[in-house]
Length: 526
Image (cartoon, rainbow, N blue to C red):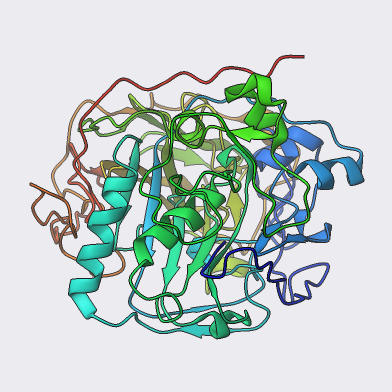
């Protein structure tokens, strides 16, 4: 939070969070059928579905944790805040993941936020779903004054503030399956139910463990300091708390801070309760401070690593079953892929395009990163692990088509589409998928070897389109030396083709970065 009034502590308006989403959609259970009417299609039982489950066990629901409001900062069940962990009797998380490139989307065209993330998975906030507990009701935030000029100025200043870190900043919205943090910039503090003098508010996620949070900055309330405010609020999203050094961007009042300072500074409680929530992270960078000092620059390096250009696209090494495979009724197979990239931040999405069970014909079925699909992959999972999608156990005769898309933080991507056929047994007739099932649901070990998986060694005719920015933007905003880069329109291939990209074009939020080697994270001791 930033405020203009030195020494003034302004309380956050009370926010009411229900115990669960207002209209929860069907939950996918690992190892179980997708629905009671589809016993032949099962979600893979391949480990925890979320980072929180990997830390605290299956079934951890962050929406059941009452949020903690400290000044204008909010800590919730996904924040890994010390007080909330203590209340639940949960251990401190191991800080053992490597620095990972991040994406910051500047929402400056007007946006509506909701307090609850109605969707497939329990979560307190998600930028891709426009939901955050920072608002108590559906709330509209208007465009800031100044139009495109304001965008360009704010973009440039934020690039300067975050120049040292491996963070992509964009005003074009990334695909929803790619984790990104959203800075909502527009309106006044009254839009969010805050008092006069409040320049911004944010969720805090210790150690930047949650990469899809939301922050609010109010340019109509605090004129002329929009970028400074947005820099602090977004840094809160990644685990930084307030410091008592005026030159640091994390100083709680507008005082001309111009950098994330690379020194150990005392934590400031001028606007809060006096309790530091991310002590176990701060002490890694400032051991002598015992959790009550913060090195703002050092912690951001620990979260993102140093700035580094990424021009290498992730690659789909293999997909199984191979495109064009033919099965016979009674056989089973797992739809899966192996992917590689030279960096450790990756968005992945599987989609079931043809042969969908009746329960999903109207809504579709997908599995992806960032908690926006029917099924999901846990954050921080190793990229080299198999990306399993669906287990089809003795599916009915028919044609089945699946697509996998992958993309890194810099908009480099790859995709592949496969089509397989299940033929009726000799002497029987063909039925539509979903109208008849296999003999039982225990045939997972009947998986046929089938033809070898397709490999990522080249591109086929009928090339699939590259990554396309759903916001409709056609170029990089504010990126020096970067031209407008979007996917080709593409001319869809024939049914059954192995459609993929080759060295996929970069998405429109690409920001050309160059710099130093990434900084390795120091593991938490004890």
